[in-house]
Image (cartoon, rainbow, N blue to C red; front, side):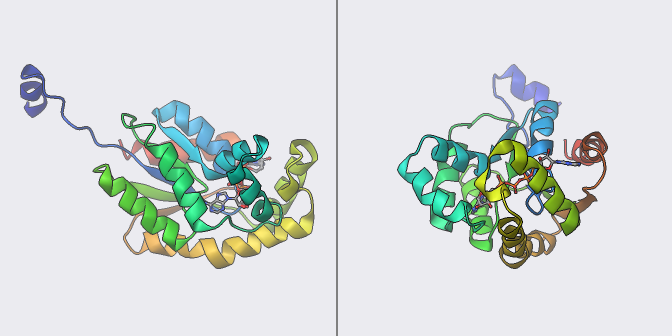
Length: 207
Ligand code: B4P
C-alpha cells in the first residue's frame, strides 16, 4: 500500500540492499562461488584479490606495492586495501548490493567497511564462511597454481604461510561478526554445484 502511494507521487522507496561477505581461507572457493552468486542475485562482486591482480598486471604503483606482500603470502597493508576498496564501491551507487570476496581480512578492514556502508545508509547483511580443511585447501591451490601462474599458488610453503596468516589475522573477523549475530558457516567441501546450491538456499532468505 505504502509502496503504491509513494509510486503514485513519483517517490521511489529506498529498497533494502543485501551486502554479503563471502568468507573463508585461501582456496575455500570464495571467488568461484561469488561469480555464480553475482549473476543469480544481481549483486556486484568485489574481490580485493582480483583488484590487486589487476593493478599488478598493469604494473601500477599500487600493484608494485601489493606484489611484495602477495608473492610472500602476506596481507597487503590495511591502508592500501581500504583505499582501493572505497574507490571501487563508490562506482556502484545503484546496485542491489555487494558480495565482498576476500574483504574484510582484518578487524580494521571490518570497521572500515562498516563506516563506509554507513555513509551510504547501508550495512552488512551477513557474513557467510566456507568451511574447508587445510589439506584440501593446499591441494586445490597447488592445482590452481599449475594453470594460473599465480606466484602465491606456486609453492607449498607460501600456501601454508597464507593459511597461517588466515588463522592469525583473518579468523578473528568471523568472531567480530558472530558477536553481532551476522556470521554463518556452511560446509565448503563437495562439488562446486553442491556448495552453490547451499549458498543459494541461504542467500534467498535475505531478499
Ligand atoms: P584472493 O584473491 O582473495 O585469493 P584466495 O583466497 O586464494 O582465493 P579464493 O578463496 O577466492 O579461492 P577460489 O575460489 O579461487 O587473495 C590473494 C592474495 O591477495 C592474498 O593472499 C593477499 O596477499 C591479497 N589480498 C586480497 N585481499 C586482501 C585484503 N582484504 N587485505 C589484504 N590483502 C589482501 O578457489 C581456489 C581453487 O579451488 C580454484 O582453483 C577453484 O577452481 C578450486 N575450487 C573452488 N571450489 C572448489 C570445490 N568445491 N571443489 C574443488 N575445487 C574447488
